[in-house]
Amino acid sequence: MEVPPPLVLKRSLFVPSKTLMGPGPSNCSQRVLEAMSNPVLGHMHPECLQIMDEVKEGIKYIFQTLNDATMCISGAGHSGMEAALCNLIEDNDVVLLGISGMWGHRAADMARRYGADVRYVEASFGRALTLEEIRFAFDTHKPRVFFVAQGDSSTGILQRHISEIGDLCRQHDCYLVVDVVASLGGTHFLMDEWKVDVAYTGSQKALGGPAGLTPISFSKRALTHIKQRKTKPKVYYFDVLLIGQYWGCYGTPRIYHHTISSTLLYGLREALAHFCAMGLKNVVQRHLECSVRLQLGIEELGLEMFVQHEPDRLPTVNAVKVPFGIDWRKVADYAMRKYNLEISGGLGPTVEHVFRIGLLGENATLEKVDMVLSILNEAIQSIKLRAI
Ligand code: PMP
Image (cartoon, rainbow, N blue to C red; front, top):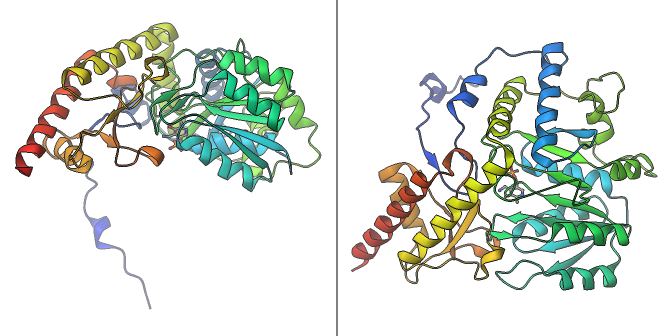
């Protein structure tokens, strides 16, 4: 039997233009899109390695770190989570997961696969963890690794006090992993000052790059620990000692570890260049102002934020309660059908309960905030009318 070429691939590619205001990805700027149409380079070509070096400098700036072991994992945000845990965890290590939504559970699933003895510290529903809760969990579990998401995009919760958590980890000889996939650029993050051992972020969120390359950085302390492991990290592809050699992090000759996507690299380089030109503090300020305006608008529409305690609200991914009797899917469908606007539903513990409105990168502007508020209101009113 011969399998014929599929008819669908005879049609031309069609990609609609949408405004992406869910939890990510966000829209890429024209600059980023154009960069990605440059010619492909070989993964060991000097020009490609040069761009990798430039990307590395950009990541150091956005993380505020001087760590040598700063690079990208070729993969989406999940690959950063995998790499962080895969390199730090050895069999039977106690790994404590901070839970304020779905992402701590996702990390727990991975940690277990790497042989960890997994423990949890869970925030009360709709709240961030308190330092007291974390301190108590450290005393109880004596973890080797502590994981927390600075921004949990499933609930719209911002975990503050990362600096104090960093101190706590040092006191307990524990390694601190912070997921800043959804938060970086929308809230302050100082990797070195806060004594974070591993951080990774999403390229497709506030950075406004393409998905597929995940910026990650390991502290000297974490790297020393990894070098002293009794066994190699369980996944070759995530071995940071090897990937770091490809990225030229350790002053040793570059090795071929895998074939990086040069086109994604151009996109990420330009997203970082734009971000750096605007300045970290200005980017954070803009995301904050947009979120404040959104929250006010939500109240004015008679709607309610999911996170009650204002300081616990993540500015980048805003969770809004779905009004009683309204099907969130119909609202999201309306916005997409009429305006090509993506508003997302909940995830994990917030499924069916919230809309998630992303104010990320290109879409973190006051005009876009007003637009999303107006469309959200129109969509809800229209669904209500249809229900009568
Ligand atoms: N962590 C957090 C906090 C996220 O919000 C996401 C993506 N929504 C991820 C990890 C995983 O990223 P990706 O979908 O790019 O794999």
